[in-house]
Image (cartoon, rainbow, N blue to C red; front, side):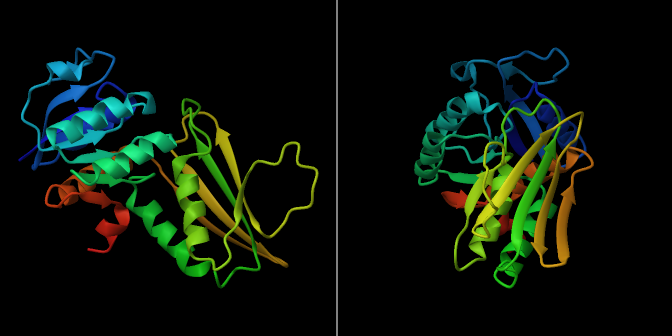
Length: 250
């Protein structure tokens, strides 16, 4: 039984992780970290990690990016493997992740969905063949999501570039850009509305034809289940930085 510290325990994704753990027979949540309290939680939730002394096997982090350094520094200090599902991290945060991965196993991906990561692999495989095509990415999320574009949109754009011999520049929207579109760019567009769990479409537009590759998350449950898959994988790893590619490749 793997003992979990759930960061972002009182948030929406924290609730989905709690539900996923409740139906799993190999995990238990022993404590949480969040600025907010939750009287319905059946485990302690700390707002100050100095008060946390539970024995923990793995940390699952779905916190707001403003709380990321606190939980990540705690993981490194206590030498606890951590699954990072937080998006919107800064360059400084990513530098800390790279350093921390020298000490502990770290799992980091922009999207915990297996399907999204398979989609990224497909994009990498086909992009050079379709190098004459314009590439546009449209991502849609619920109106509470604060970062734009999504980390997943960047993951997919990077996957396109990884498959190209000549890399392209990212263009975020086109307001105020009075210029003809150039094939050397990847357009990235964000929609925020309603309760959309997550939808990502990659368009390859050529002369008289259009190829669309699309992933739709019907529920945020898939991200919680993906986090548990990542935690299972990470528990047996040596220090290093791992992604969903490592899981897919097993």
